[in-house]
View 1 (cartoon, helix red, strand yellow):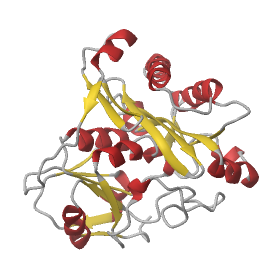
View 2 (cartoon, one colour):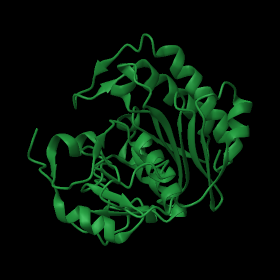
View 3 (cartoon, one colour):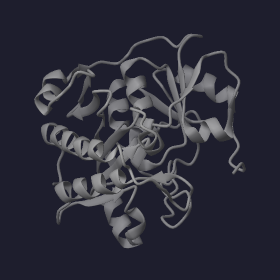
View 4 (cartoon, one colour):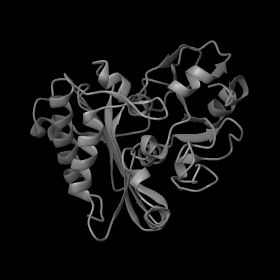
Length: 289
């Protein structure tokens, strides 16, 4: 499947969520070499989505399988049509029975993420692109796929000014290795897709993360259409939401420990002034282990 169809993506989100929820009570959690958890759901959902999306015309970059691909395959994926999948974003939350986890799917063509979406099943929250539009649902009472389809509506830019009471979301890496001197309340959820939906819907005022490509691929096209920008701590003028998969933004040495990670923590917010303000008061110490 080398095109984006929002109805098909919604259906895949729903089926993948059901698969994950069946596993959640007994997730078979183990630690990977980088000391991050992985569960049976991560592997099962990625296998399911790969089977549904990948064909002779498309490639796949997935968190659980990218290391099994060679350099030629990954180079071709970034230059061709490619699905980018995080089967369970917020794996630690999932394994600990929190509801702040989700599934992320992005579609890239020629090294640019064209379309994307995320689904948080237990929150009943979905965020996805449909052409140049962004669709959203936020309803915990969703009980069926038809409910999900019926709840999805067009989403506009939050348009909320950043004030001293605006919530600033932090990724786990930033919370553990960073420092931020700001009066605003902060929240480290352990799930990029949850924080992304919170930012897009206006609950949060900013988001700081040092995430990997598969974490952000489903959200970046939504951010771009909503006017949300993403600058690096070291260079707030860059804009990760232009959706380019470039060495200027990501570590693209596929064998490195930080393969596909953002090269620096990125600050996402509606206003460039907000990004600049946070960049001036936040630091990330990459030497900490």
